[in-house]
Length: 270
Length: 231
Image 1: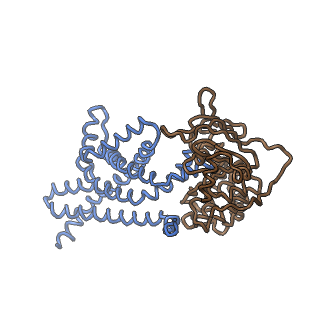
Image 2 (image 1 turned 60 degrees about the vertical axis):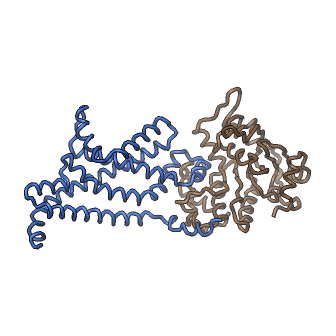
Image 3 (image 1 turned 180 degrees about the vertical axis):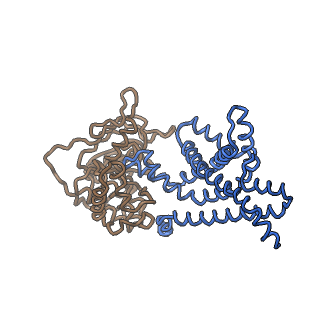
């Protein structure tokens, strides 16, 4: 299912305004004990762009994503989001206090491989939890907002169900709705289709694509190469704790330069 | 037989029921304080503050390793030596609460740890604070998991209140003993005491079953759907 498809159909919404980097990462490091998962990663995410992180398992791409919103605390490096410093390394490594980090997370929600929905709350309650209890928005407004979003992901009729009553694909679309309801600046996706049955993957990918078509800024970790090629503005190949190669989908998929990327492409093409 | 039902019961029951009322008060107050102590202890032991974790761990260990009757005697007879003398009823509630609290803290700790940590990530990822995650996500689910076990401890506690008779609280057993010392009808009176304990525990266990059914939410009843399709 990983065969390559011709370069295609992502709408390249060219706008005149120059894109500013919304997220800037420099020299990011993460150690678990002795093990260096991220050695030194530099990365920029521009507004309105879709960035894909691909690479072999254990290469550090999920850890990199989880460091972006501090679900994982980096061991070193600098992360700046929309002018706000999450952490900085200038001689000494310092991190922003949890109170600032949580405000930044609310603007940069994540969609997880295993959905991580609140199992004691209905679909609708999952989606309005952030707007009502974090952003303190008016409940009625949040509900009508959430219902619009649920209509767009095709789950309006399921709004009063509990996560335990949904299929994996439906759960993931609820999780996406929960992220979208935050009116986020960036949405982070951590292998959003890896835990799904094959027949459920397409629905989730379509939902992600429709978000990209709205011009949303997204960072996606995935093993779905066909999807990455179709949707990405930029692809980063993460391997052995570094970004080994970056470029447009055409550059990365059709003309890999580094040996590691060539090997990786060879291994997934078989 | 006739004597027991038509003479002795009417004669002694009112006094025994007075004691039973105290038994119920002891049990209810102690479970309320015990739940508060247990929850606070569980949260403290799950916190990142190492001295607090150590201290609360020691509390749970000590209280679970000393017989309840000894704990009650220590509280009632030893605390006055350091200038803290409590009325018997208060000492009883304190002793029972601390004891059941130590056990319940383990129940709550296990219930909290049983909630998938992914839900914590889910909460963090939409900007919830750790406090909000506990209040809105983890504790509501953990409580429902803990209800049956807490109910079981409550029924145990109801019967353990009889130990408080040793520190001269006029509860059910002690009132029974008083009647016996006046009448020497030990067999009949102990039987009545047993009947009342049984009735109280039976009612309590029915109530716990009701409470459990009431608190089992739709998302748990729907659990089989998820289990069936999980890949």
